[in-house]
Each structure stands twice: as C-alpha cells, then as structure tokens.
Length: 173
Image (cartoon, rainbow, N blue to C red):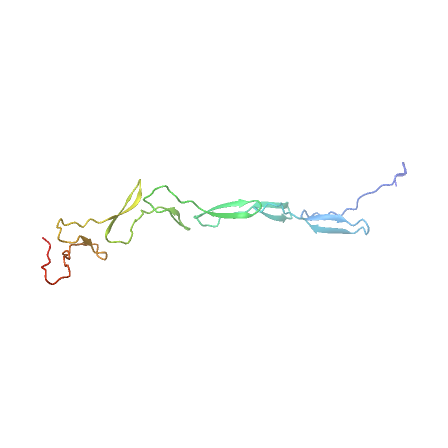
C-alpha cells in the first residue's frame, strides 16, 4: 500500500527464467511460476523451426536439393519440398531428350533405327526420323525385286510364271 495515497500497489511476481525458449507464466490462483516451451513454428513448411538458448526462435530456410539433376527442386510454404521432372526438351527432332540424375539433361543423336534391315534410317532436322524402303531394282521384269529382312541385302529371284498346268512351258521372256 502506498502510505502517501492509500492506494494498493500490485507488483507482478518475477517468473522470468531468462530462457528465451520458454514462455514464463504465473498461476494467478497459486502464485507458482511455470515455464512452457515456446512454440517456434512459423507455419512455413520451408523453414526448420528451432529455439536457441541465446537467440530464441530461429526459422532457418531448409534446403530442398535432392541431388537429382533431373528434378526442379522448389519449396511450397504449405506443402514443403516439391520435386518436379526437369524439362529436357531441346526442340531438335534429331536428338533424344534424356536425363541422368548425376549429370542432368543430355541430347544424343536420335538413331531412328526401326530394326528393319530393308529400310534406310535417317533423320532430317525439319521432319525428324525417316525410314524409307530400300530400293531393290535390277531392271529385269522376269525377277522379283526383294529385300532380305535379316541381312538387308537385295535379292532378285526368278519370277514364278507357273500356271499350274503340266502341258505348258512356263517361262518369262
């Protein structure tokens, strides 16, 4: 009580424990102090939330680097780290668009191989892969112009002129 005014004086009880990582409270009914851990969660999934005895709450940015050069690494404040595939498209029709996690995007020449020995495989920068039938032409109308699908070699067997009748001589002239 203030003797000069007669007013009551209410001095708050000192409950400060000196630790920035606790919320210091005094129970109004019992007068006892309590020290609850401070909630340092800032609601941002892109931070690591800790409390340092010297500094209090620390909300350090986390690294989302997954060491995979085939992903674009980002952080969403609600969802945390996000890893989307890297777009390796180079816009060239005669290259393959590939990615290896250790090296990233690379673009080897497109082979255009259709696994058919009787086609000529190539790539045109304007139109892309082309698989054109190999020309097997000997200029002889009495042979069949063909390509051996195993070897890719041209073959010219005689044309079969058989009419199925033994009473005729079958030949190509």
